[in-house]
Length: 443
Image (cartoon, rainbow, N blue to C red):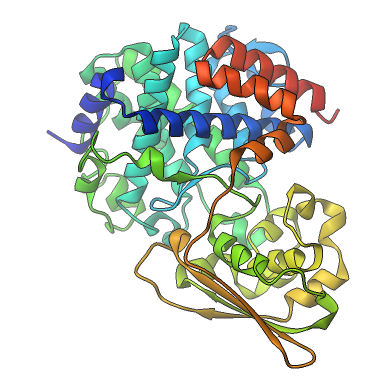
């Protein structure tokens, strides 16, 4: 037996009566949050390229292209939806694996679920299978993918999408293991955007979702793949994580410990690795930015390597700013909040925020916990010599209700989506989300 075969056997065999109530609640919460971030992205025209390409790919009318009111092939729809969910960097995060779980799971659930006419139980179980898969595969190699310059969401997300698809297509065990083996050859996702400020990261969940669906279809058509795709000497961990992984963790306590409940909602549309620092910064508010002499921030070394590099003080693009702790913290202290408007083009050029960002001093503080779950301290020295300090043990996450209403446009629309997700009525959910995305879309 291999890790892939053990994982596939569990995924295909999971039953409703084996699912703890809190896991079902968590899965629905994250599906709802993902729909909200997708609609918010559509409102701002943040994923138009992916939507246009998906519309151009067309194909048989299997799944709805959100915001366009048309149906395309399931892989094309998943490409667009995954990009929408992640486009604002406002979607959820699993700290242990540092992956955006819903962005790779929701697109496959919606696209393939619509294609096959999945019931509410089938959709929920498939979603949980996807969440557990991406979180566990990434969590077995904490920060190892990012350290190699790879985005774990794409590197690990292809397997989640493949398993979601296999479950919804009712593939047998051997075919599902082949799907995982095939999916592994699409694992990747370069982080080079960090050097240029480009937005390629937006595409990674869509590419993962699309690739996983295609992998399952290829397996169903007779293609095969290595069952040792995860732990093999040329498998995922050896090739893309430099061997820094414990493959046994993928299936350890599977069905007993649920990673789905450990996914958190983002309160800020920016890199998760700066959220603890922003939470600590909020504790010193209100403060006059004109009176700030210096800002000292303590962060995990793995976070500092990504969001505190010298080039991040003066961001060139929205994505630069979303990965700049100094600039984002300066914006928080100036505006009193960090929202999707913080990263709009007219906000990036503010000289007062840039000047304040230049006064941020970062100290790396090692911690046994992974970077996305580590503490942070912010100490502000004022021009009159007084100091203000904030400290958090970890990022607090966000409450869903207010975030969802802001993302989709109103409390009424949020309530309609919530009811559809609670019932996991895919037809109603897709219809409402499509309407909201189209109503708010930037033309």
